[in-house]
Each structure stands twice: as C-alpha cells, then as structure tokens.
Amino acid sequence: MVFDSLSYALFFLTVFVLYWSVPTRLKIYLLLFSSYLFYSFNGLHVLPLIFASTVLDYFCAHKISKGEKKYFYLWVSIIGNLSLLGFYKYTAFAMVNLNWLISNTGSNFQFTVPDIHFPVGISFFTFQSMAYTIDVYRNRIVHEKNFTRFNLFVSYFPQLVAGPLERADKLLPQLSEPKFEAGKVPGAVLLIMWGLFKKTIVADRLHWIIKDVFESPDGMYSGLHHVFAALMIPFRFYCDFSGYCDIAMGCAALMGVQLTLNFHAPFWSSSVTEFWRRWHITLYEWFRDYVYVLFADANGSISTLKKFLAIFTVFLLSGFWHGPSWTFVVWGAINGIVVVLLTVSQDWRSSSARLVGVHYLPRPVLWIVSVLLTNFVIAFGCIFFQAHSMTEAMSFISQTTNNAFLPVSGTFFAHFHKYEWDAIYALSAVIFVQLVDLVEIRKHKIGNPASWPEGLVWASAWGLAMIVLFFGYENKTPFSYYYY
Image 1: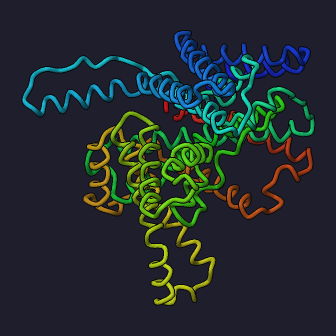
Image 2: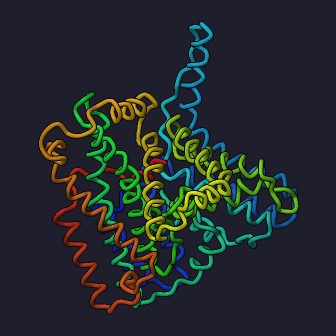
Image 3: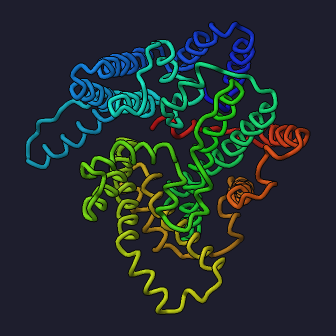
C-alpha cells in the first residue's frame, strides 16, 4: 500500500473517521492497530521485525532509566538494531564482495549468496527506535513507561516506512494528547495534494526519462541530453521523497500531529554544505547528533583533523545507509570530499575572491552563480546514486563527453521520442516547484498558505487534485525511499 494509491486513500479516510469518533482512551490502540495493519501490506513476515526492534529498545531504555548497567544496555540496543539492519540489508552485499575477494585469490570456493529482501522502512524504524534509547542514556528524555505508546512511536504509519525520522521528545507527547483543529484541515489537505503533485506529475515522469537515457545505446542521446538527465536526477528524488514527506505531514496533521519538516528548498542553496542541511533534514540531524559527536573530545571540542574525518565518515555512512551498493558509497564519498574541501579552503576562497574583485559583483549575481555551481556538483554525485553499478555510472559519464554535445537534428525534446511531452511537462513542473520553494524561503506572504483565505486554500487543493487526477503519470513507480 503506497501513498499515491486508491487503497491508501480509502485506508486513511477510514482511520481518520474512526480516530475522531472513538473515545480518547481508545485512540492510541486504534492508531497502533492501523499502523501494524498498514505495515502488514508489505507482508505479514515483516511485522515481527518492527516489533522486535520496539521490544528491544523499550527493554533497554527501561533498564537504563533504572540505572542498571546503563552502558551495557546501551550497546545491546545499538548492536541489536544494527544487527537487524545489517542482516536484512547487507548480508547479500557482503557475500557478493567476499566471493569476489576469494575468486581473486584463485580459489574456486564460493559462499552461497542468500536471497534476502530487506523489509521496507527498516533503515528508518531501527534508527528512530535506537535514537530513543541513546537519548534516554544521555538523559535527554525520560523513559516512556507506556509500552503501547512507545510501540506507536516506532510504528506510526504516516512516517513509518520513509520518515521523517522523528525524535521521541517531539512525537510521543503529541500521540498522548491529540487535538482536532478544524482550522488546520484545509492546509493539511493542500499539503497532501502538493505531495501527490510532486510524485505523480514530476517524479514518475522523470523516472522513466532518466532511465531511458541511462539505458540507451551509445550515441542515441547527445551529451547535452545526458547533462539534462543528470541535472534532473536530484529533482526526481526531491519530488519523490519530499512528496512522500508532504503527504505524511498532511496525514499526520489531520490526526493532530505535527511531523518535522524534512526538506527546506535545498536547490536554492549556495553551497553543497548548505544543500545537505536543507535536504533530508532529520537524517542529517540524526548523523550529526549520534555519529558526528563521537569525534568530539569530552569537553565537546573537536580538532580540525577530527572534524574533517567526522564529516567524511558521516557522508560515507550516509551513502551506505541508503543501500547495499558501491555506487551509494561513492556518492557519499564524493559529497564528503566536496564538503571537506569547501571547509578547508574557506579562508583561501575568500581571500582569492577579494583579490580578483569578485566582491564588486552584485550579491544576487554571486548568489545565482553559487546556486548553479552547487546544483551541478550535486547532479554529478547523483549519477552514482542513480546508477545500478559503477560500470553504468562511468558509461553514462563517458557518453556525456564522448557523444556529440548538441543534438545533430531536430529539437532537443524530440529526441526523447515517446517521452517528448513528458519531458516538457516534467521540466515545466520542476520549474514551478522550484519557484514555490523560492517564494517560501524568501518568506513572501504568498508562499505561506497559513496566511491565505480558507477558500483559496481549498480551491488550490482542489486544483492540484484535478491536475493529479487528469495528468498524473499512468506508469507509476514506487516511492524510492520505501526501499532504503
């Protein structure tokens, strides 16, 4: 069951009506049952996994809160969750690479590669549950004694399979005292429709266009087409994942819960460092609070060398977290190296810019140039994120430079053949989405639906619904982060 399906719409409407109809004391049980029912659509065999992670961290946090072998139970939680994640997500990857190493020694022995399909959302619920135990250990939060409420915190269905990663001190209190606010309903519905617009109008179309360019024979597309496809990769993932998060936030808001903003106009960032602070914000903060801090000294300070090592490690782990593939690791390494280099060269870049007189240029010009350069760097890294193998990534890059850069005949979009109009529609929608983001970060009143008349909010939601209904891409693709 996915957010852009009729089955989910019927499921959510049923839960929504029942949730605000039953007595308050029963709401938590209804939500818990609904969350497990929602997750069970991915197969009943996955239910014991999320329950195991829940029981493990509830038990460990309980022991820690009582002061019983706190350090021991902290590591029981960490090792338990990482073992669960590692077994289901990385066992096959480890066996394939181990077999490759063995074959290079001249041996004919090979391990059997297990056919393990990792459950959707396992990267999210293990991280969220484990973070709770760590926060209890650090005395940031008090252990939640109500197991049902903690179980719901881990399994809350709007954000269960793809985030945002929520912290216990924010989500748990909202699950305890839900309040229906009729005034927030129009904005929540608009947010849901905005998420569906991003997914069905933009992301689904871009998926097939990018896939066609990646898998095309040498010479079929010009270098410019490859550059276009590369630039569209991050926009495709953005509209896919932020679309999911918008729907999750809208659904949660209808049930009285405010989820954490996970994206904040990342493509208007003037540096790669700023980009990653605006993209998948909850994951960025998770790595900052639970990995980056491990490199700091006892007094909280961090040396320059350790800082650079911490930054690179965080990006490398982030890449590996996304999936069991060397392409993800390379993607993480590229971004880690870029961020480290930007940090190292900050003073040199500033002095060089003053030396050549860059500071005399208008600030808007400097900002636009910085934004464009940032997007090109992000797009280059995303070639590896998109590719299924290093060979495919390198082939794509080589075609960008080896093929004729400009189309030899016809219009640019005509070369996409059956995807010609899809490319035009998708690009137009991307520009529209980015203009909305720009208005939002510039804090114009028009970019804040909360300040609109209620009638305008409903009209906008209805308009987006009609666009999704009539122009949503028929050849749908699953939400990407369901499988990360």
